[in-house]
Amino acid sequence: MQSEVLEGVSAVDRMLDRLSRPLLPGVLRIQQGIVRATHEFMFKKGLTQVMPLMLSPITDPLNHGVVDASIAYADTRWSLTKSMIFHKQLALMHPELESIYIMSPNVRLEFADRAETGRHLFEFTQIDFEFKNKDRFFVMEFMEDLVNFVFARLNAELPELLLELRGELLPLYEKWPVYRTEKLEAALGPDYEMLQSKLSDTPFWLLNHKREFYDKEDQLKPGTYFNYDLVWPLGFGEGLSGAERENEYKQILKRMTETGTNKEIFKDYLEVAKQGKLPRTAGAGFGVERMTRFICKINDIDDVTVFPRKPGHASIF
Ligand code: ASN
Image (cartoon, rainbow, N blue to C red; front, side, top):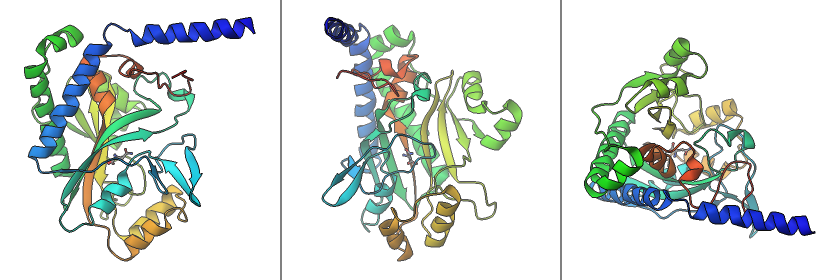
């Protein structure tokens, strides 16, 4: 009994220490600067903001396993949002909406083997955006412009804080290098993404991942996909993923079969696709905490958040 109380006290003490980490206010201020500049960029570029959903009968199946996070309510099984990918596509069915973005809280109950990657949290926020009738080249250039806009804004608004946290102002980049997964893998082996991140001093694009059914497959080269990841340099790793989307019913069915997706759960989404109503879109989402981590040069992403959200670890708050 006594030891439980003692353990309880020390968990509280540990939390109190955590809540008073000296660098935290500055890191949060940089993160606020990222969000503020991103809203402004989105507004200037004409994207309409949509509010996030936290529960839905369908959510991103992801291409890796996580612990189920769903609840029963009103005769329905609702999943906590892993990403709003399908809602982005469906919202763009409106004839007068051309492009949208969402500050989207995502819950992905990762297994404990992702605790020490430095870039996984079991709850985080991504800024998710999607365009109608645009392709991958458009989205990649959009993101490059967004990063330069946000970085320039931070340099102008919070220079002292940047000097304190990262020792220098942020670089502005020319066009980012583009690599293909299969070529990098052949050159560097299975850990190619992280190795190339460590070798690089500018962000780069990594094209063609084998992933969820909603990333468009190249019809001329089946087995390759029109998707792209932004990888932060200096070993910070992946910071955004996106793609042109599958929107044709037959192709979605084929990709669902290949990826082992449960078609029953997606039956209403499939019905929309069958009616030919899914628009042609492309988009992406970037992790806010991951961008903050890169900018502030923080090793463990759990140091970007006020409360601990490390995969597989309990927290008292
Ligand atoms: N937001 C990503 C996208 O737009 C999907 C994801 O987060 N898994 O492709």
